[in-house]
Length: 117
Image (cartoon, rainbow, N blue to C red; front, side, top):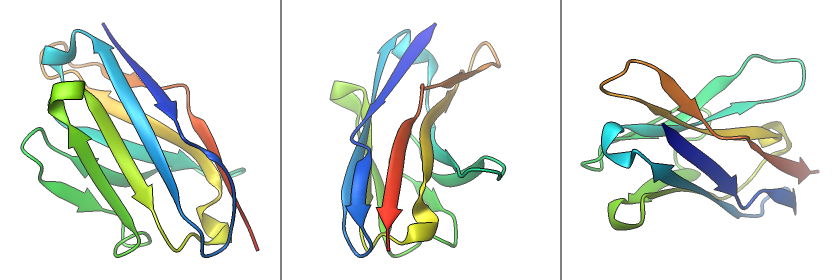
């Protein structure tokens, strides 16, 4: 099993920045790619960004140029730097990692990000 714990959410004004962290523990050798999803009230959960263990990244069009995903493999921690935040970025942000051996997925508990206009 892998445990994922997010931190860093909060309330920020439009145009501001936040940095989310996701700390992985347990069988961390079983995960390779990691990512961030978000879910706004009344909407489906959507992919925000992903990163492989080698550092290859992928972003949703809505956050390209504003968000940066990164990871520190030595610390088993992934980050999401969010700049130029917009009210539409308001959501619960979830850390995600698929198990490359068992086929199941791991999710964090989520952290609330609220952007006021």
